[in-house]
Length: 176
Image 1 (tube, helix red, strand yellow):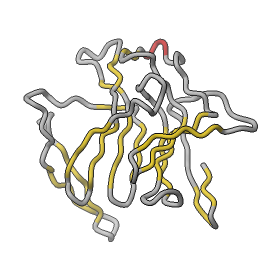
Image 2 (image 1 turned 90 degrees about the vertical axis):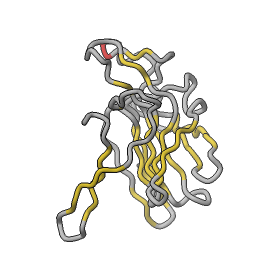
Image 3 (image 1 turned 135 degrees about the vertical axis):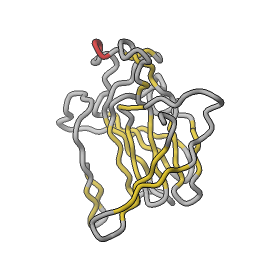
Image 4 (image 1 turned 45 degrees about the vertical axis):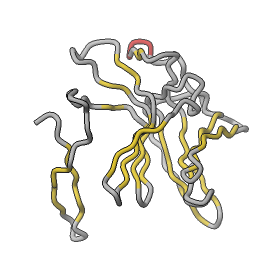
C-alpha cells in the first residue's frame, strides 16, 4: 500500500480520474516520501530537484536528496541525473523552480533560493545554515543537460526557503 504510485488525469470537464502507475524499481527497498524539493513541469517532463527524506522515526535529522529526478510523461519512464553543479554542496532543499521555453532549444529550468546544506544531513532546527543567496540564479538547460549560474543585481531580497514564486512570459520577456 505504501509503495504505490498514482496519477490523476484531468478530463477537461472539471473532473478526472485516478489510475495506479507502475512503480519504479526500488531494489527491494521501501519507497519513502521526498518533500521540500524544487519541482518544475514542462510540456513533456516533470523535474524534482533535491529535497529531503522524512526520517523513519519522524525525528531529526532528515536526509538531503542529491540529484534531480525526471519523469518523462510521454515514455512513462523515470531517470535520475546529477545535481552536483546545482549548488556548491550538490544538495538543495526548499527552493523554487520554474520553466521557460524562451531560452535554449528545449527551454530552461530556473531555480531560486532554498537551503544548500553542507552535507547530506539536514536539520530543521538549523534551517538557515547554507541559505542560498537570492542573487544566485541556478539555470538548467534541458537540451544540453548543463547547469549554469546567473548573477542577479539590484535590490536583491535576503535568502529564503519555502516561499511562493510565480513566473510570467510575454513579448520576449520572462520574469519571476
